[in-house]
Amino acid sequence: MANPTGKGGFQDRPEQINRDGAPKWHDTFGTTYSRLLAMTINDLDAYEPKTAKESLCKEVILDKKDYKELADRIDGKPKQTLDVEGNMTNILTFAQAADADD
Image (cartoon, rainbow, N blue to C red; front, side, top):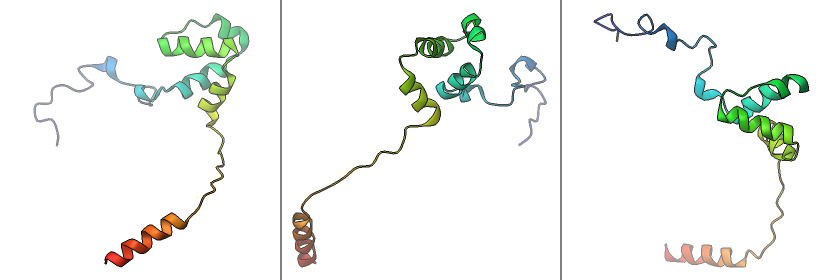
């Protein structure tokens, strides 16, 4: 539905137009890490974080201790396999009892 009054919108608030295109909420830890990791070491050292998230990410990158968390955040955790062993007799007994009730 069109605005019948014609008032409001970005013509009244041009400072709220997001000219970068991506929503501001899309700036996740993963994207912040990726953006900071793309910098050279000298640029990263000189970079002044604008947000608390950027400050935390910069500390993690420069600390070099949390590299596993950093890699998991950017590339995703590797698939993990799980071996399951057990006795299926209880399940079968339960299923047979349920069939007998019907």
